[in-house]
Length: 532
Image 1 (spheres, rainbow, N blue to C red):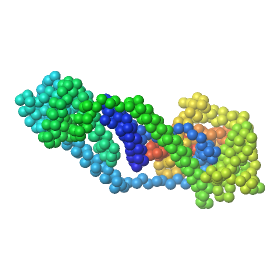
Image 2: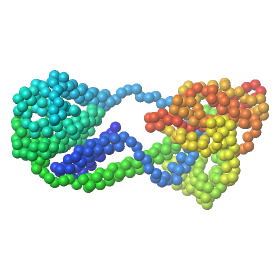
Image 3: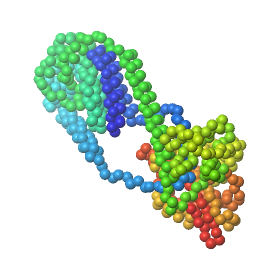
Image 4: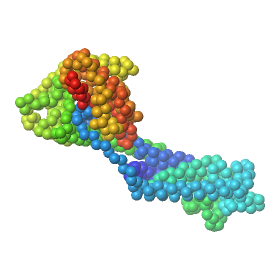
């Protein structure tokens, strides 16, 4: 709310200055009316939206986003956050004041409707009239002109006054006033709303004066009529357009003024401000999003490094690219002929690396600071592009068998791209991860043809907004699976489909679809089947 207030106030201030420089006390009255209303709408609506534009990320952020999809393979402690139930004092104050403005608005509306019910309707060439003894000074509201019954019956009401009110009626000035009054109920804390309301109503009076003078052509007589209404000191009916609106001096000046406003200059400066604002906000929002991705990924990986020893860790990183230390040497995997990225653990810290096409290695810490390569002993291990394409093809074939709705890998990749892989709160089982795994193990039925005592695999799926599972696939490992392994995959998919819906992921306070990768270790012996 604070940032919204700052942004909207900044835009209203700029549009106000443009108005004063180019349009104030000028005769471009119709343009001024729509310019003021457009400025209000733009300044109050546009800050509600977030704009993001493409911008280059540094290598460390690219690396972290690259490996984020592998984060479910890293054991992470899931802590359920307890939503705050207490309502802040500021919220109570805001609701109270908004309620006061709403009651005031309804009260003023009720007063006008009461006058309408107490009077009688007259159909004239000036428009529909409400003639009532409760009207002390002529005014217009929506589709009716309200006048005093004695003035109407004695025919003492000058036609110039009726032409003035007819202008308010024909040009629908009440809509502008009601629009701003409704905005004040919600945005009562925005000071520029009150200023814009005043200049909008002043412009209404200039328009009505102009219309009336075109009909009567007697400037001196018209000014004397307005002075008489000012001399009566009658109160102005709230929400209405009245002949004796304030600022008499400026009205008299505008009646004689013929100088036009700088319309095209106003349009140019306003569009420049609008485009510049959207551009700056879009770049700032993208930079903030990149920062959030970088920070979140780093925190999760750091958390994985600091897991307590009593928790059994199950890692399913592929055999060929698994970060392992042999004789104090770190294995950095890359795809031959392509730029590759990854991460590794070293001395209880997480580091990220990139390998370009020329096998140049760059190593960074979690903050993006380039590290001295001499501090690390590493080996490069290549995986050919052909091997990678074959593994991808095998994965897509098994995915198609598991989910008949998607016939090829491009469609599956498109569906996964539509779901979020990065979220602020990841999807979790409603009953807790430990209880979920127990239920999964209880439901899992190991096939009889299993020869190995322990098999590791992964299930990748989308958690929908309602918590259900869709597009369940089993990512290909870096070995050729045998028939028993494929049977276990099918059983794992079947078991997952029988599990209760999860609590869906949340991002920016909204429930979203998200991807999830579940590592599984299956231990089989003649007496018991165990699934971790």
